[in-house]
Length: 324
Image (cartoon, rainbow, N blue to C red; front, side, top):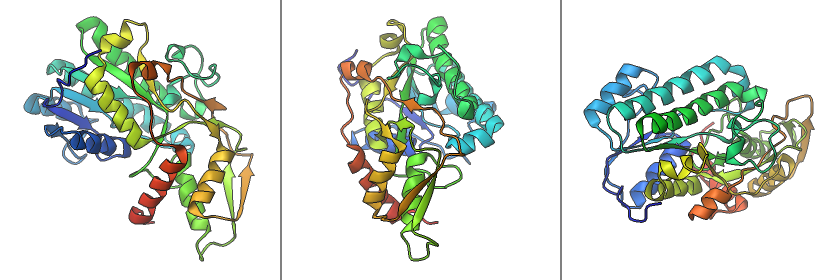
């Protein structure tokens, strides 16, 4: 591990800066004194197009890259748009990682997802469980694309000695989340469902949720993730992972709860007092996904936002910013 911040004045490209994760990382770096940050909107740079990505890297010459760009969604979106999820995510990461190598980028951090781990892996999920069993079917294409990104970073390190490595966040939520009920993840979807169910226009005073409510999930406030990424940028190098025999580093809280428990907390924060019903004909997805975060704790980072506080902050942002 390095102790001095030699990256403060480096030219840093945040891929996906307008999304929930990328925008949180951008805010965190800017508030921490980073001034040499490059961003591009999709209309300026299509990361799926290899020639555009290569031209960008050779003209801008970023020294560090954080890959927060991805096509993302919840169970419904992942299971419906399977080809899009695997194709676009493979192209984005392959184009960025290869162009970063070709243009001499000093450091690259690739953000993956906890869905890379096998469906029935032992809990909590240790980094070494990667590729030890089969994946959850509903989001398998997305997971395979993310696994490919992890192995791209590791392979470029092993063949070329690049300082490229991967971080695996648990389920994220916070400002700029996706609240579209067809494509969102469970936490923002619940915020919107409960919010709309308590309005005078609501048809009845109940909310129906997918599945049994029994699966357990872990949630990390996105501002805490941004703090973790800055910590990794400043303190952790690729060799710190690969020389210990792991391909990626988990980022999470190390705490989980059932979807039923989550729904209760969100309904209380939102102020919904009606009934919550579960449609057990719909899929639950993976039974449990709890990250083992002992490695990043040992390196010196730990989350600071409680789940209820994070949900309150997210709901306040929703009230101020979301337009249905």
